[in-house]
Image (tube, rainbow, N blue to C red; front, side):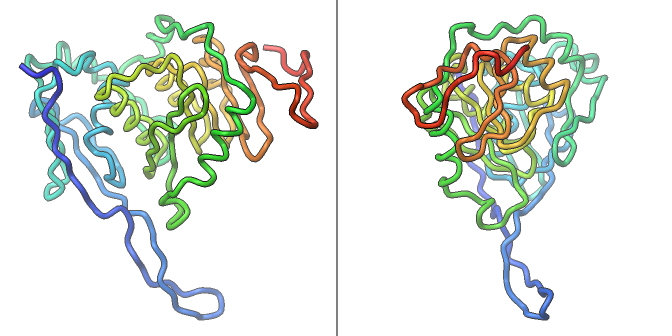
Length: 285
């Protein structure tokens, strides 16, 4: 029996051209991202409906199941089959999911764009997560990540209205890049890719264009990633969770600017860089 599930390779249009009228009465054609529903069935039981562009539906569903702790091992999954004719995905497992009713009874609508959803008390499991304490990031790696995202081809540059997430090596090499209508979908899709490819997060850097909410921090922690970067900010609960699990949060990462909010010991300043002198008392956490 194969340890990897059977996956469809579904493909759909990610953008659509529409006619618009500007403030001077001029007609033009622009691209906008497509948003479609995808209802997830787990062993023929309807689980939830996700709103997504549909660029990585198999990875999205795998990552969602992983980050929700509904399925612990890929070996439990027989197949993930997406059918866009009915906007549904069927996930089949070998032996079913134990206590599925109880584990999905509590549903929390999160602050994710388009309203993400988490099941159960994921916050109750935060105490069980321990990220690598020896993970480091160099100042030049922060800038390399930001520059890579800035120059990387994207749907956002063409159509806007989407969020991006990306996984990088410790040195700032791009490994995965995913865009979707919500950052919670993009991070789940990357979680699915990591799961399928057998990639661990302990020596990785995660980047998101969206804000660092508690949901994003928890997902990153469950993926084992100790360093999160965002061009946006963070919420108070996101900061609390990051502090608790030992994660370093970098916010407002634009150009050569960033704000490190938690666990500053991970950042390696490079003193030969002009006009960049670290202040040892710059942050108290």
